[in-house]
Image (tube, rainbow, N blue to C red; front, side):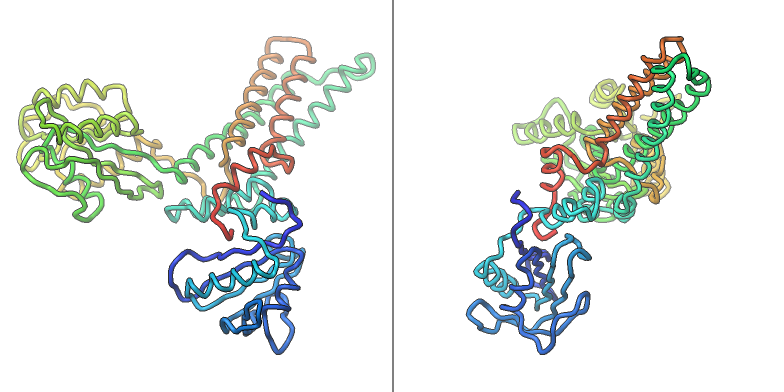
Amino acid sequence: MSGGGDTIAAIATPPGKGAIAIVRISGPETKALARRLVQTKRPLRARVATYVTICDERGQRLDRALAIRFRAPHSYTGEEMLELQLHGSPVLAREVMRALLACGARLAEPGEFTRQAFLNGKMDLHAAAAVADVVSAETSAAVRAAFANLGGGLASEVERIRESLRAMLEELAAAIDFPDEVAEPPRPRLEAGVAGLLERLERLRHDGELGQLLREGVGVAIVGPPNAGKSSLLNALLGSDRAIVSEVPGTTRDTIEETIAIDGVPVRLVDTAGIRAHADRLEGAGIERTQRALAAARIIVLVIDGSVPAGGESTELLARTEGRERIVFFNKADLGTRGCPVPPIAGSVVGSVYDGRTLTALRAAIARTGWRGERLDLSRPHLAALHEFEAVNAAIDALEGACAALRQGHPMDFAAGELQRAFSSLGHVSCREGAEDIIGGIFSRFCIGK
């Protein structure tokens, strides 16, 4: 990605026709571009929408639109910015972009506006990543969780922990360097302080894992023998007839994937072909895809016809999925329960896809199995990027080492070394001096114009 001396421009609205199309410009030549391409009876005022005429580089009128100026450093990027709100024609937006590029602007790369905001001190790296999470959020809970990270709260919490570590290190340094003049701090007090910091970091990690669920969702494979009711279950959970339902075995020949939200968590449901030993070549191809979906899923919903005695395919699937995160659903209880084992399998659900209470029980079982029914406090910032998890994990490991050194009576140098390692590791969570590959990885997730 290029340096900060360029003036960049991009269409900031999605492709296609709409009420408006927004074009953004940012950089040192923004004012010069506005003077050349924007005609107005009065000067553009900061943060005020002004009705203007947009022209091309030859002075030909393109559109009547709204222009909003943002002065540096009080803009999103920290640079001079201009936002043009055009009529929502894709052709018109492209013509305005062509004129801007002809006059010296450069097409922005994905995430370059937010990258400039980061480089100009408008936000830390964690908050910049949260912008991408807001844009890509699939549920309202994911949006709220991403917004919690926009305010820099994570950096503040990590810095408070580092301040506590700095105070401990200063106290230990004095005792180690001047043992005749400065007494060692009491080990129980020091160990209690380290344990408190360890608990705060573990909570950060735990909240980050829940936040990861909100962003990425959970994969759930619906598997079972033919005619057990897998497609009917998918349709019932979706509330629409997405999959074809038939009494003919082998109707489902391919995997069907749809997403629902359970407790705010995106759940990707994959309806699969029924697994049976005797299948033709086409059905066999569907079964192979079922096997792949079964291996990749975080949770398995094993659907079995509970109205008839269990067959060999059901028994084989029960044995094969044992030890996996699974929910065994004995379907068709409205027709009988001869196939339901006594005593019941732990965590199993008995019922019918046509019964609302059964569907409620299955949603609760997915939440209990996938994230133990826990809810993320959406007002609290949490870890989001891989490098943040790695930094916190390293700090937790170091603090556990410090606790062990203090508890086992090792010299204070041992504990001080571990505390220094924790202090250094936490400096990588959202510091401004992030590695270039980490920075590039974060901004590569963005769309052009953001």
